[in-house]
Figure 1 (cartoon, one colour):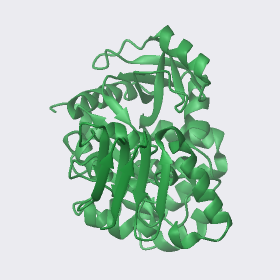
Figure 2: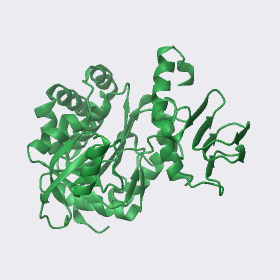
Figure 3: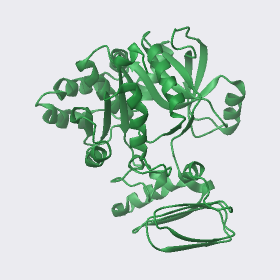
Length: 370
């Protein structure tokens, strides 16, 4: 894209979390962003990186856990070591995005960063890229810009963004001011939001001048801001490891929405660009079924190389990582995930409750399968 403003743009990919609702496929050592969950031949993080290359070139930073550094490097061999930020322990999104902003500010205070989670499925890519380009133009006027997703149904699983008047910025024709961010609603409220046409899903995508991002972080989370700026000051020196090891564990744990986005919106500093692309955060196995069409006329989706599945009057999704034969007879909307050391059997309606099983296993000390 021939756009001079994009020379200031730097992509940031937070790759955290273990995807507990996708257990036992997603584990602490191999979280969902390291898997190909769409049958495309690309893992989620690889696809995220490739979406950003036409916009940012090699100006892309990944923030992930130390345990995933080797796997991320193997999947993204072109990623510079200076742009691989490894967390010794998870500290939620404000620390991850705040540290990225602080490092990029030290390198070039005019940078406009764009943060896009590693575990999202998006299409068409060109429509996403156009939305990001608009967001960069809006951000250049001194705004934190989120890309909101046009809702396709009244979801109770996502937060929402209430849109205001048009921003009136050249190059960002669809940008609007944000009135407020609202938490996940109940079903009736979600229907009202969708019917009003004033609300978008909050996908956690933020495009902002790094200076403005840090300003709001300092105002709302001064301890966190001071910590990430201390690490950033040492980042491109031989003191990086020592300072990071000393400071990172002391940082408060909070989400970027609470630390920056919501207070910045209240101050009138947030805009939104509507995203007219499809978007899924692959939050559970029901989502996996949506993203992978059924492989037979009866409606059974089967994933896994060499999966051996027999189906009679059954539908749902099977993910197999073994050579074990799985026979499903007379059962609807089933979810079966078969791995060498753990087996999950549930239904699509109960897919969100898988997280509870992971929490119970952890509480009972069964951490070897997590």
